[in-house]
Image 1: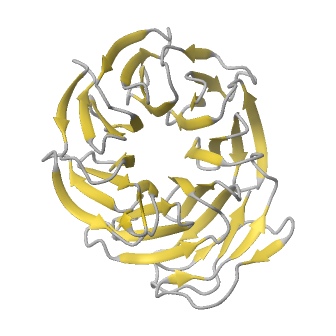
Image 2 (image 1 turned 135 degrees about the vertical axis):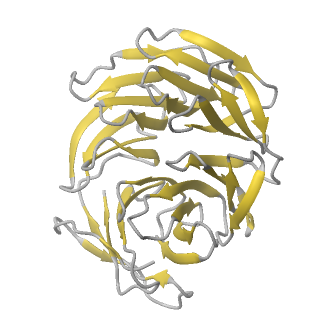
Length: 345
């Protein structure tokens, strides 16, 4: 991985990370700080458009932020407990937010600051949230063991299914498909058919809780991440969805829970890559096929890094517990970096 840098204009104080001994492919960093997006920890971030991201956190707000200009565009208030997940429907201004208040709210950036729909029915925190490719259905998963399928327009629950000990941690809809993938605290990964609302495949259980998952744009591959401590567990795993349960490679190197894993967009002629973030306050970029770590960025003092959102080939957003949102630029060049810069907001 080449240089990590930010193209933000310097609007306030410039921070430089502490220097000292660093591992191979580890990056020094400077931080440019902007107007904070939230007050408190941030649990989740996603993209609404090439310029706008959406995030949610412990302050119960759903925030739309222009990360290229370094300014807040909108702050939605409606949940009465912290926001756990946000998703957006591509090409629209629709935003969905899940919360510890057991609800999911729907917002429209073009329709004021009040939510336009509410999805109620879970008994515990909602951790999984995914929109069908046609934009008509919403899938939710909770620690109450229920997976639910909703009609977006009417907010009616069309399907419900409870599996014992299936404490859902994340949900992904497979692109151009009727399949849904979910991870669970019971250490398994399940594939659902949204038409029958039945589990079609259950992957072999891992040793540790599965915290997150992402599906490649072509729908062929799945990456999942594990919790852990002291370097035990803490990995991400690449699976072949065409052969459910077939493990391809593992990405090992984090020292604490790997909280998030995402496929990075691949430029023409580029190397397919995966990004992971961890409670060890680091982001790692991996060669998708060989599992070679191409680079590590340590954000000292940021606390757990719990959510990633790639905007394009080079721009990656990262949510942290202690220091807000970070914008990092990931280059396709050499694996060494020269004093990269990132923005914090």
